[in-house]
Amino acid sequence: MAKPTVAIVGRPNVGKSTIFNRIVGERVSIVEDTPGVTRDRIYGVGDWLTHEFHLIDTGGIEIGDAPFLEEIRQQAEIAIEEADVIIFIVNSREGVTSADEEVAKILYRSKKPVVLAVNKVDNPEMRAEIYDFYALGFDEPFPISGSHGLGLGDLLDEVVKNFPRIEEEEIDEDIIKFSLIGRPNVGKSSIVNALLGEDRVIVSDIAGTTRDAVDTPYEFDGQEYVIIDTAGMRKKGKVYESTEKYSVLRALKAIDRSDVVLVVLNGEEGIQEQDKKIAGYAHEAGRAVIIVVNKWDAVEKDEKTMNKFEEQIREHFLFLDYAPIVFVSAKTRKRLTNLLPAIQKVSENHSLRVQSSILNEVIVDAVAMNPTPSDKGRRLKIYYVTQVAIKPPTFVVFVNDPEIMHFSYERFLQNRIRDAFGFEGTPIRIITRQRK
Image (tube, rainbow, N blue to C red; front, side):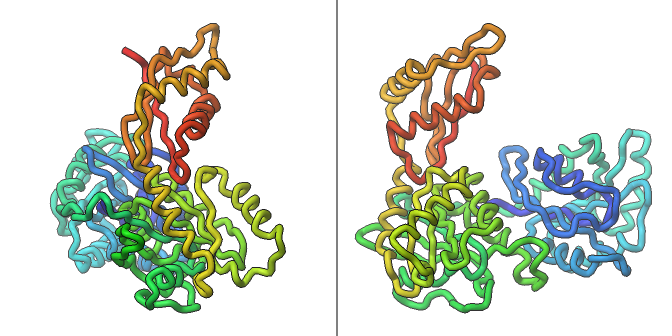
């Protein structure tokens, strides 16, 4: 299901990036006391009261001649266009400025729910300073402190109240939903058209022709699919055409709704840094993944070329060591028949459940082969392992002390589970808990 989207908006240097980092829970956005330092939106996922949502940290909006401000303003306006709820941040120490008023005018035009947050209210005595901000014409302002984390709970309560009601998608569980993600012009739309045998999606040599995610029902060999074709994702800072600005967010929404994600690479151009970032979105979302190398017909090759390219992929995409690789040509339709069986297989693995008794036998054998780690004289004891979820397969390991579970040993257990049960194409998650 697609998550709601929240945009953090405000003029430069009011603390947007600090608040973004607080909500996301990790230091993702650059924080610096220089107006305009956040030059492009940063995307993250926040959660509050069982609600997960996409979060956009916009560049500031300012009326003036400072560098990058026109681009920053465009980015903020696009974030506003994409958002379900907007957090408008102002600075308590500077009072209402003319730039705040200009931002407010842009937000009025958006017709979206706006929650006003007055930042840098670092102690209760400063609360009296927030009342001037009623003049901006929004509902009650929320005093917060990004640097100390104060008031964010009340702010997020209000944000969640304004989320739109999301209707459950009525798609049969037996239908496999898959999306295609990748840089512009790697041939995502061409692959869709080749699979469908008709030109259902616009194809062009101009990078970024596909603007929106497009859903297409499809049936092959008795299996029903929904194909989600996404807009191409482009490297931040390199694209200034406004319609490209939110293609990353659109792709993230498509990933949310997918069972399987095809990470499409351009075989002619080779692997690029942006390809790895794009693939990371699908991996972090816990989706089944297939790496698809398109335009293989345009590559000059001998009998070793494919193996060499596979080696490069494995070297660059270490976090996707579970993902199968399929080489295709949408133009000549060569090897496309390999794609749908691969999608069906990884989808089955993504939903696979294993019996607890067999699972624990595998873990006992694994521990016998490679004893558990110890720390300061205490050895890790594994009491029991059980699968608690699918999509992706998730396992809870009950132990005497989770602190002793080293990352490398967790990885070892993952590999043993893969050896025993397959799970090709899907990430596996392991959660370590103390037995009570």
